[in-house]
Image (cartoon, rainbow, N blue to C red; front, side, top):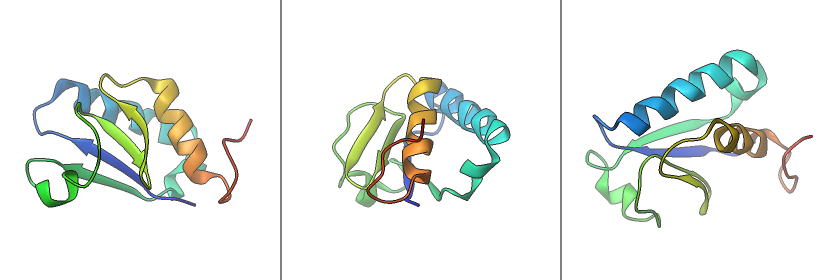
Length: 94
């Protein structure tokens, strides 16, 4: 299981929507609740945010791999959780 990093900005409507989508996905897929999720506000934690290559929030990373950037999509968020929950070396479960 891999950690998901979610980069956000306080007051960002897209970030708020991404959090709502994550909550809905976790309610539908309780197995994803075990996936470590770290939320990083780039204004409050610029030292961490500056280490990642993105321009828009919300952005989702697993390790150094960017899986979503900008306006959130449920499909991209679900794919990120599936990838993070998969055994290492595996892709998403189908």
